[in-house]
Length: 340
Ligand code: NDP
Image (cartoon, rainbow, N blue to C red; front, side, top):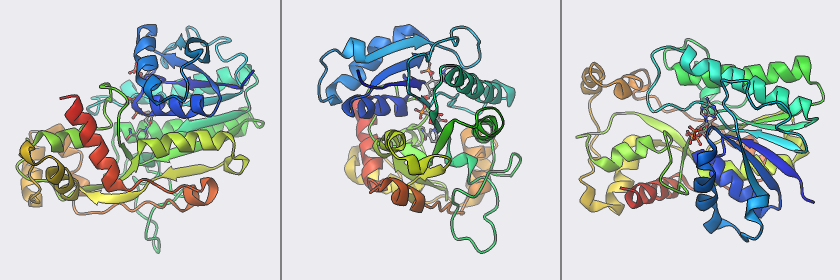
């Protein structure tokens, strides 16, 4: 009988790729979803990429859990050998109040860790984020952010989602240090995750690419973001399970930084009929637009500032060779084209 991995947030964009990696590596998966009605959707999304679909109903099972509620957590991880905790609120727009997002992120993480502890699970991989690393000033003398850096709660570039991820990750490390010294935690901290979605439910992650693809913006802001492919992020979660060296580590997942105009140019070349504009907008215009558009408002403090993030640890510990950012962006655009 193979090891069963408990995966929270099994309906997510990243989680579906993790399920593929886990099943193809021979693990069984018990996934949590908020509604069991999503089970068939997840099975259908992952099936085409599986080496075998034999016995899939037994190899991939589902339970219903909500990060914000106590119901259902008792005994839910019994018999599992590891926990991959990916679930976290990832809203399309920043919420009005921090509580809407921070409470489920932090309390949900603690619910998951306590359930794992009660089931005797010692190995935990948490999907944190680069937003728990890079929303602070880069320390003097450093050219890029790395795993030693922590985001500040109220830095000008910070937002409620970033605070929710930073606090949830801190809560996990604190829980392990104070309550579960035998638990071996690794956090995977991805930058913007792009690449192919396994179905049309790809949520917030591809929003930036979707916006460029729509051609609705007359110019692109002087804003950029580091990018990593979803297939690499999924692979890192599964590699962590068989890489003891990664225990106790935060590990950033990033391939490289791209300006939005560069992303637009790539997508425009591949989809010339979409009316995509790749001209760079003057900052004052973006600031003006920010008065009316909340999405635009959130990027204003970062205009013209490249965020460089190191992938040295991921390469060293997991031997990662990352899918090029440009290839990943184009794969996202293909997904969006196929679903529009
Ligand atoms: P998705 O929105 O696709 O996945 C989020 C998952 O969390 C979904 O399964 C969602 O369930 C679940 N979830 C959200 N709120 C709750 C809740 N209250 N109770 C139970 N489950 C909940 O996003 P991604 O796949 O992109 O994100 C997965 C993880 O990766 C998240 O932790 C995210 O913060 C992190 N991450 C993502 C990045 C990205 O660019 N995509 C970058 C860095 C980190 P449901 O389907 O029911 O909504």
